[in-house]
Image 1 (tube, one colour):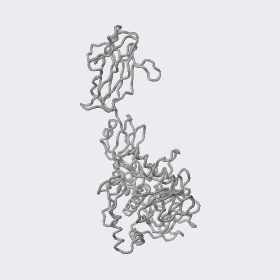
Image 2 (cartoon, rainbow, N blue to C red; image 1 turned 60 degrees about the horizontal axis):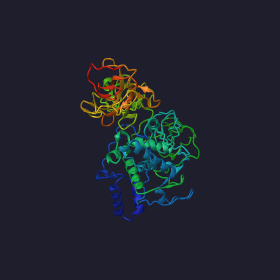
Image 3 (tube, one colour; image 1 turned 180 degrees about the horizontal axis):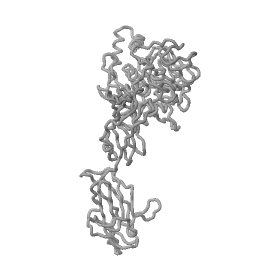
Image 4 (cartoon, one colour; image 1 turned 90 degrees about the horizontal axis):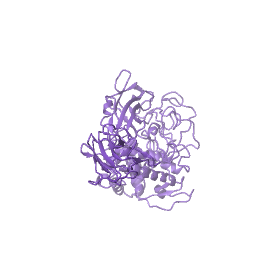
Amino acid sequence: MAAHFGRRLRKGAATTAVAAAAVAALSASQAPGATGDDHGRQATAGASAPVPDPTGDDATGSSPYYTDLPPLNSPNPSPSPSAGTPVAQGAAEAGIPATVLDAYKKAEAELRASKPGCNLPWQLLAAIGKVESGQARGGEVDASGTTLRPILGPVLDGNGFALIKDTDHGAYDGNAQYDQAVGPMQFIPSTWAWAGRDGNGDGKKDPNNIYDAALAAGHYLCRGDRDLSQAADLHGAILGYNNSQDYLNTVLSWMEYYSKGTYSVPDGTGAAPGHRSDDGTPRTTPSTPAEPADPHQGKPGSKDQGGRPSPSPTPSKPGGGQDGGDPAPRPPGTPDPTTPTPTDTVDHLENAGTATAELTATAGDAFTGTISTRAETKAGAAVAKVRIRFTISGDTDATFTGGEDVATVATDSKGVAKAPALQAGEKTGDFKVTATVVGRSLKGVDYQATVTERPADTLTATTNGDTPLTCTPGGEFADQVQLKATYKGAVADKVAATATLIKSVTDATENDKGPYFKDATTGKAVRTLTGLKTDAKGLLTLPKLYADDTTGTFLLRVTTPGGGTLTVQLTVAADGTATASPSPSPSASAGS
């Protein structure tokens, strides 16, 4: 990348000094959304590498990417050319195909609503889309946003790239032996399986659709409670997408460039990059999609990096040359695809000390317990560097920190992977978290978790102060009963409550006469109300009470989880002197 950067600088600089100044200026500039000096872009040279994403899984499998850098001059928005009209290279750099740009902006809007604290800028998605696929090959998408031809990365067979054996049975990449990054945002199938989203509302999650892929990328970048307006979180998110310092710098360059101004161009007229991180050669594509990929297509030097790899005249064997003879040479440090990976050696998963009692939380609270899983060989030895996927299932709105229901974590040196902290939602009840090995069909480990209702241990009536409610037989009480809930002295908000007209202090069954509420739909008399909840201040105002023709004294009881109880005494009298007041007295009884 450094050499290419130098070539780009020399085009606009007459001397070495001018080029050096340009590098310094670019390195010191800030990314979009930066609000302070700590948000500045990481310098290309001499900077310490940010810490990679902690999950141990990146979206692209560290596949190659386009290394072309933006022009040094700031982009100036200009009118969009008509369809089919060539665009000058300088102007085209700032232009983004209309459908692709729309997908980025829609993804930003959705994330602003669902995860406002993430502060995701669409320019970040555009920068990633630029380096991953050249904005879907210059906008080669149909009206729904689906690519006209498959966009596939190289075969991840460990020969020059990461070794990721097939995880999708070829469903997304057409390769049932090894995985390949797929679509305009280049997701590997194992990541798309949990990160995929439906961005265009067609009911499908398709990595080849720019709306789906852009929204998935946004959620992926916003994992772990990140705030992308902070430099550390921004850098960590980008490295989590593709763990490369040069990749980080390239994405930041384009993100900064797009933040200075851009415009839409017709689909199919965008500028296509020409250099890649693996071999620097232009990416070319076949005219028609091929059959499922051969394991050795898409390697450095094959020049087939933008679409489905072309079929080989003579299929090669994994690890061998085209004629099945001597193995093709591998770059130093790359794994031998015939050698078992750590994932291959895993025989089973074990609970690494998580107690069921630790996996209970009150609605809206964080769980205090941590879910831990250990990967072991058949002999019981720990297996490090294995990706463990934790998946939440069941009728629950509980999530991991960051709002996701799936998280992938690599095992440590002791073979243990710890899931992110669980956050309880508002739905109560039991749900399950399952740990599985990514890329293997081994039996998972299930962890049962429970969300309990918010409690209140004290209920206090606040109705009318000293003024009693009034009612006559067949009439309605002039005011409504209001109460306040607290728990250990603090306001108890969102606490569920049940209100029942009971027979007596000692008989809490529902009364069949006297005061009643009205069903909101039918208007019929009801004497038990469920689904009530206190507000943010712990207050609850009950619906209006009505009286039938029976006179006497009656009891209204309100209860909450946690032991909160309030009994209100109601008296209905013909002279209109009915009252409503708290009645802690155990001797009070219902009238008739």
